Length: 505
Image (cartoon, rainbow, N blue to C red; front, top):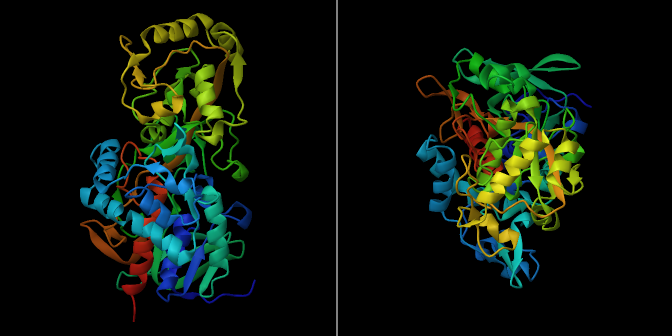
């Protein structure tokens, strides 16, 4: 590789999908850009590579979807899709994050959502498709039953490969692999003016008019997880990339950046109990197991511990993973009878169950024996649930996927199931062993609406910007599905633009 210049307009630290979009946005404004990626080329892509690549956006129904995805099939062009308004978005976002997110920041993200996707499509050539796992045929017509109609073609992995190809073939953008950022360089006036890096060739400084941190949180750092998230979090499995150690956060804090957000919170889901560590890139998101709403969750003692139907899956899956860490052996079993299994597998709602390892039995007692959990307890758990299940009325739209006429909830249980509460009484029975898989952390850096990183007193640090999961204050306690990649895209467009225009000579 030939020696590159050390002088740039913008340096982007990180090379996930948000970072690459950030670099492309800066380049669009005539900046010479350097992208620093700590991973080797064969492990590039960060967390984004492991996602489904779905985006929650404001839309007016099928008309907007047709505009964003012009190559829909004829049948898809007539799919029934309810509009998802800014008010709907604000309600869902604020509800799951306990109204802790700054409303003005939520409004910025929500109101910019569709424009960010249009920019990706029209300016950067990104291809989108209909999010297939929310599609159901009802009475001969296709219906879209979720709030997230847009997905990147090929998921997060497909988008990552496309963006890398685009960046690597773009004149004016340099990309360095196996080059970790170690220190932010600051001039005598206090302005960030570059980055000190470390690679196999040693330490090297790169100068720039602005630096954008887009290198994620600290989910891959077990010491930080134990320090900030609490007991047992050092034992959680990392669902995505193995390189997010919090280096970008540390560098920014070292020069006075303000820590912000829910530092004891994170996005954590149920993943296969034997999921390899580090995560295998080819598996992408397939070790995820998020359709517990159609069955029951029990621990290794055979006891339920969570309301599986408390809310829609996209509003609970990123929170429920943490509960596995406080169960015996950090182990959970998702149980389904034949009806639930048919809904999840044959309905292909989430393809991450297809070909996944499971335990099958003709009776609950046999299932307990095969799982190594107390049969008497599991039989009692399922029996008590079945007696209270099937009461008409629930709070979830997923009932439409079951093929049953109405939703159901339980009555009389100390721990209720609020929706999709149908008896588990049709053999055979299936169990998936899962544990906690952490995706990303919620604590990070405080930024303003221009994506400038702020010091104490909310004073912008000149020359320093951020995009993606490194930004704190975007999520608290929980996560509305498909908001992460969307928020990254929104701040990519903001940070990439402002880092250039604020420092034009």
